[in-house]
Image (cartoon, rainbow, N blue to C red; front, side, top):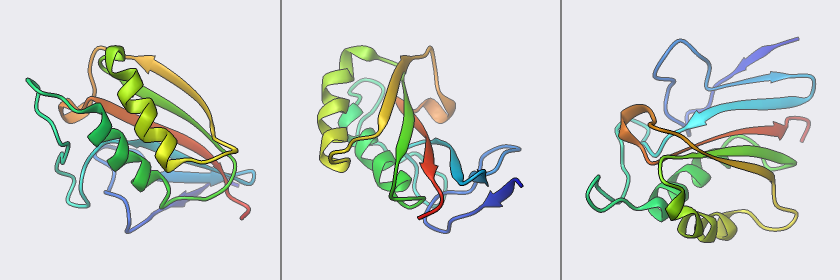
Length: 125
């Protein structure tokens, strides 16, 4: 049975979707942008001086508000040349066994973000 999951530790959805949904023992977390709880972009860079590391750090912290076990996630980036910077910060937030992960370059993201991360987590813990 599908059930909506809400967390006060993550911003509200910015569209007609749930923050997360649990089903079949898993939690499916919607894409997380580098925003504060008020929904405003809080990235540590600007379009002229973007910071993938800052955005990755912010999003990784928010994802950990959802679950703590067995992760799979997708990182969407608008500039894969910043992959090493993102990867370095990601490694500081997730220790072995690390999540399964895919990284995809996209043309743009909501609110002008540089990175968005969605996730699937084990909801049984």
